[in-house]
Each structure stands twice: as C-alpha cells, then as structure tokens.
Length: 160
Image (tube, rainbow, N blue to C red; front, top):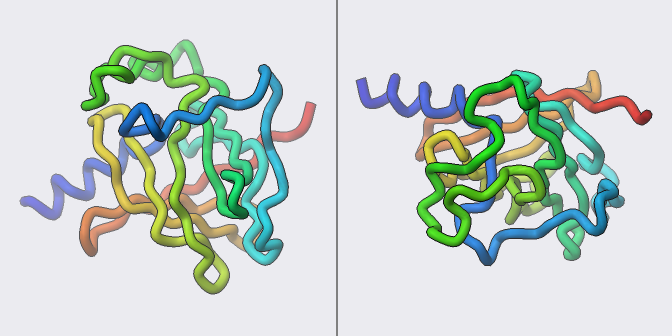
C-alpha cells in the first residue's frame, strides 16, 4: 500500500516550485533564460513542455554549469496550476508558480544529470530528481522517494 501511495505521488510531479524562498530564481526580465550548460554531452537547456501539457519550464545554467528549471508559463485552464498553496515556506505559500525555480542541485553523472531536486507544488514536497535526454530528443524527468521513482517525458517547445 505504501509503495502504491509513493508511486501515486509522482503522477503529480509535473508542476513544481522551490521548497524554500532561498531557492527562488526568477528569469531575467521577461525573456527566457535558456543558456548553454557546460557539459555538452548532457545539455538539457531549453524550453520544455511538461508531460501533461500544463506548463512550460525553461531549463538553463544555474551559474555553475548545472541545470536549473524555472516555470515560465502555466495553462490557465488547468485547475490548481497557477498558485502554490501547499508550499511549507510561508514566504512562498500562495505565490504564483510562474517565475519560480522547480529543478535544481544536479550533478553530471555519465550521460544524465543526477542528485538533483524537484519540488511538487501539488503536495508541497521536494523529491530527489534525475534528468536524461532520450535519443528522440525528449527529456526524461525522474522524481524519487527512496528507491521508488516515477519517470515522465517532457518535450521541447518549438521556437516561435
């Protein structure tokens, strides 16, 4: 039963914001901040559509050559995707998800990014995360609690 509950948690692992106010990093100006991430073998920089289509996440260099993901758009038709009502940080609870960092803390590991964090605004919790590009150019975003992980695939948003 506990395993099923843990796996169910990750079905909502698409909309995320920082767990703490010190983790907030807004995109400069109103432009996307996609930049080159120093490890070109696993460069995940770019604008991504979450698996359920409810958000666009801009992944750019955190400033140290590792990826950070910032929510830059949420679908207003999706219920509960605009405001972070479950954040345990009182300074962030009730804030807009747009402009908030949702992915951070990654380390390069072989052909993927591991040891990172993803915050799920739907339950107010932070999970371990891994990122990996597929051969088809999609991004596998994995959220984990202990040994149990859920993998979702995000797709690139075409440049306008």
